[in-house]
Length: 298
Figure 1 (tube, helix red, strand yellow):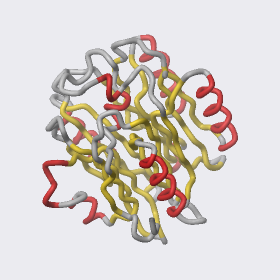
Figure 2: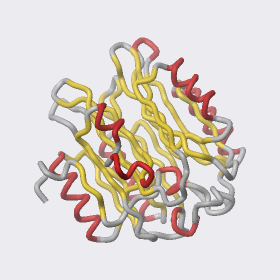
Figure 3: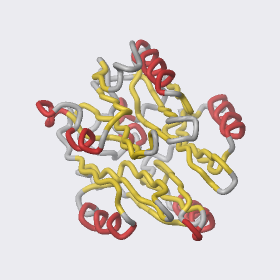
Figure 4: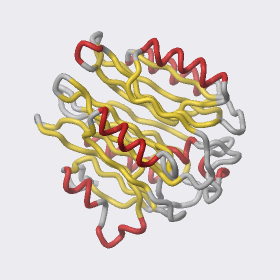
């Protein structure tokens, strides 16, 4: 396909959502099929740091292999936007939509107004393109009829207020933190939680705070769903993370603050050891570009 045309399209197969792809296989959302969305073993793949044309080619190739996108990444760089994604085998033929050239109005409108009830937002990325803010998003077919709500460009206080509004009946399935002037902004997506799956969300932790939380939550039977990071002025590097209760105890791995070479090495290592990537993030630090990844036992 022409990469200038493939800004927005509906795949013949679709991704379920970030949280579903990573949800525990037992005691997950009762309306979701864990055998489909968190299978014991499934084919998978990923792409990172791709130009828009390379990204479109990769998506086309994965669709041809009957795969679904479960994670989307978009970043502004001096060389232009760079994109990435994580895919796994599409086990139930669900449709999905990805768009990496959105304006704010287009993001709010969704993939197609007449299909509003058929789609829900699963992942959103905020980045810069030609000096202006742009958005990339992944929508999935909403077969379960769950309600997802999302907001972006939130200050910390606004993100906490949104948390207070949603936490009683929904759980966070996506958090994006990105530099904004001398501070940071947040985008979060919340999804109905009919099964009452236990979760935790942290928006603004130092590296040391995250490390302590990592030890505490891992010991309490939680697993990391995703981790993002951004530099917040004099406060330095900050981390935002979503944790889910790991009901079935399946193993998982996490690495953060990796150089590109280190990320590649760990990607190879964990793939060899029987783990599949479920999400990754690229972010800037005082030491340069870094990566974080979360892997699930496969």
